Length: 373
Image 1 (cartoon, rainbow, N blue to C red):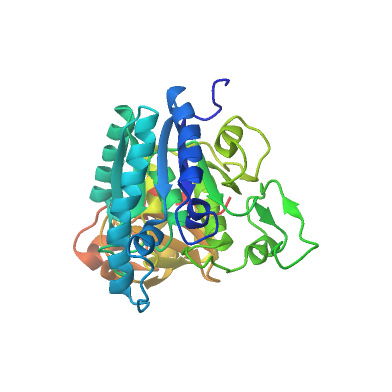
Image 2: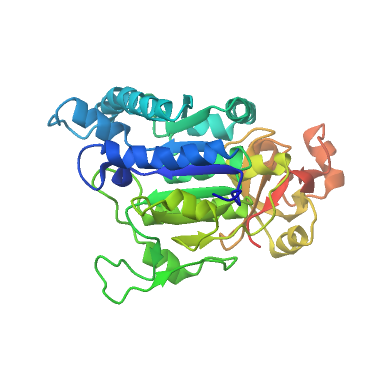
């Protein structure tokens, strides 16, 4: 095998891949993926595995109990299954001489600056020690407010967290089509999505269908790919059961649907705003401010027209145009209540209104990332 084209890689395994579309984990499929990851590891690649399958493993371990579909029951299955899933991975990686570590994350670990840095440092320390981190959402304790929601988006957050060069999303489909190929015989395969703005028909083609065991569908994979490529990470959606799928993807072979990185890897200080947003905190800005940001300016209070959500100084917020289009994310210098008091005002008016100031910009350009290219 030649030197891999990518050195730091996040691989996401969906439940459908781990079970072969059935109800039980398939060790033969898992060992094949681990074999490929071990080859890359021996070539000096740094690998993080984001793995679903805890609930499926829990159902299997408890002999498929008939349970109500409540959050506590799902969390119970995840608690049982996560132990079994990690035990299998530990045994499989040990066959090839590598150690693994379990890392459980929630949205809170990613959106808060301090925990973001702690998670990043832990993952980088594991990689530096030659350990393969196996990441899953902490379903056992996560509530709706702190859940990422699916491991596709979690994997893109992890890729952002550790400056990954490639995100490989393995699923039960060969990639993205113009329609669902299971329902439309005229669906055309899309080998690459390189447009800066993903077209409406591509989003429509992704659909909303989920597998009966997983929590994500092609839509969540498309969301994950879009976030990752905007953070400087090339993304590939491919079928996990294809022969040597990981090795072929890493070596640059045309397999699956490829989403080239739109920009070079962002410097560390600009990666946090891309993944640290809570999904609710935002400000709206006028057309003049939109143009100013596109030209490389900071966000000033004079261009802000409305505030939504509760946020504190240093939090990540979204910046949206008046028609609702997200144009940027950034680390805000003022809490929500203060921004509401100074919106539409000139920078020289901030201190007279608030009695203090943290600078003339609400979001400085050094802590702001455009999300439209």
